[in-house]
Amino acid sequence: MPIYSPPVRDLQFAMHDVLKLSETGLPGHDELDRDFTEAVLDAAGKLASEVLAPLNAVGDQQGCKLENGVVRTPEGFGKAFEAMKEGGWTALDCDPEYGGQGMPYVLGVATGEMFVSANMAFNMYQGLTHGAYSAIHAHGTDAQKQTYLPKMVSCEWTGTMNLTEPHAGTDLGMLRTKAEPQDDGSYLITGQKIFISAGDHDLSENVIHLVLAKAPGGGESTKGISLFIVPKFLVNEDGSLGERNGVSVGNLEEKMGIHGNATCVMNYDGAKGWLLGDLHKGMRAMFTMMNEARMGVGLQGYAAAVPAYQNAVEYAKDRLQGRAVTGAENKSGPADPLIVHPDIRRSLMDQKSFLEGARMLVVWGAHQIDKAHQGDAAAEGLISLLTPVIKGFLTDKGFDSAVLAQQIYGGHGYIEEQGMSQFVRDARITMIYEGANGVQALDLVGRKLAQDGGKHVMAFFEMVKAFLKENAENAAVADFIAPLKAASKDLQTAAMFFMERGMKNPNDALAGSYDFMHLFGHVTLGLMWAKMAVAAQAMLDAGEGDKDFLNTKLATGRYYMARQLPMTATHLARIQSGSKPVMELAAESF
Picture 1: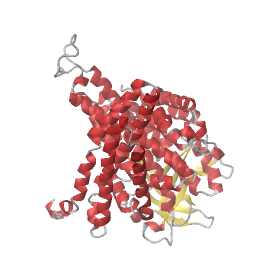
Picture 2 (picture 1 turned 120 degrees about the vertical axis):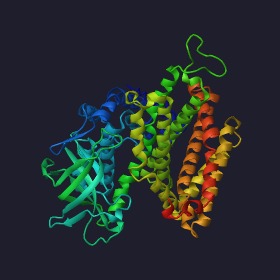
Picture 3 (picture 1 turned 180 degrees about the vertical axis):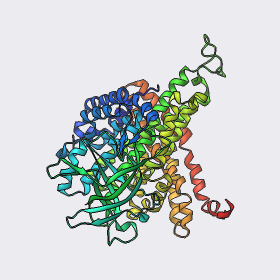
Picture 4 (picture 1 turned 90 degrees about the vertical axis):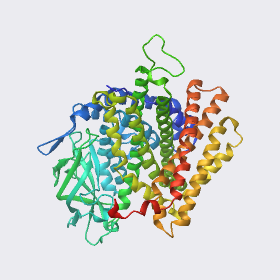
């Protein structure tokens, strides 16, 4: 069975040595001292490694079953879900007014990484609930909040988001689900939704669905869509559960991965629902949930690859194959371990440098969200700009990392017994759901770059420029500063290309959007690595911290700057080729 080791020390380094969270002055962050967060992360890591990880293969092998209209989760999931609820993990960063612990979002993200790495399919049940909680918390009436949030914070009731229909994925303007107003202020919801993660299961007493539908008078575009709260069981005035609502599971999807999560076809047959937010403004309310979900999926993208990497390292150290070209290193054995071979080292370093950079980026991004929650408009604009980068780049590269880890095993990686196949299969969905990565790239180039007159991307450039200037004379990290400067210049050049060519020929911008998303992703990871290098070097100079850990961090970062960050030049060259190579071929010639 695959191993999983919670990366507590690395998360502590990101939160305290790089970001210095307890010194930021943000409300609640003064509580995040090193001892407190270590205790929280240790406890979360124990739950992840000892309870959730052993169920990962179980969930993959057994999957979910639809029996007489009820979805049954894999063996052991119910007990594990109770352990997660009893530990208060579902309430960690939720509002104390509704039973939450009120911790900063960044701490929820740090624990969330470990839960995803241990058992991604399982964690989705509470992860989606958190997104639905956030939407109701932001847009619900006081009565709606009092009715639903306490039970959702505790995960006695879970939540979902219902967008996709058989004929309408990204293009939500095409959806057909209808909402008919009733005299009592409710609506009757009729239609079908597909690909609904955690749509039904036996882990909670009730499931609170957030459903996009069209009410009369809304028009045909997405501007006419409204969002509705549609519970599986109606809720009585005293908070108890009433009769079953007109919502049912039509089928369970047969999927490539995340078998332990129930991905449902949901049928709404005159189900009773209540408007969430303003009529015909459902996309605004749904985006509260979707933006959080896209950050969460970015986290999933790298977190799913973390155990794959950890197991690949152990296999590379143990598996004896061939001899080192410079001479036998395992002289008493018949062969040397795989890890002596340069190409194996390259693969492992590709994984390690990406995963640690991605972890830093997501923790930093969560910190920006905490600042935005406190009214920091600049932080809100910055994380809005970077959300498609975090979702798209981290999931693409996370899947690549899982494949690299599988490849270390050779033929054994293709055998289900080793567990590497599941990591690859589970990671694959992250590139697709919550907006396929091509859509993320289009959102980045088509909307986010020009948002608020381009203010946010210019703020990013200024942030990088200020960091480079601040560390220009720091010779100890020169091998981080120079590559970051070159990569940032590539990013600015690409953005200027879009500004100059995009208005004349929009295809010139859109044909380069995917490359731009990856170019941007490399620059953000380059910035994160440079920040980590400055922090690590400062600690070494001061004689603080674990010397071996810090030197390993610097060596890993130098690898990224030397071997991965130069990809920005390739992406820039592709962008500058324009749309002609992409659009030249006639459709019938494919």
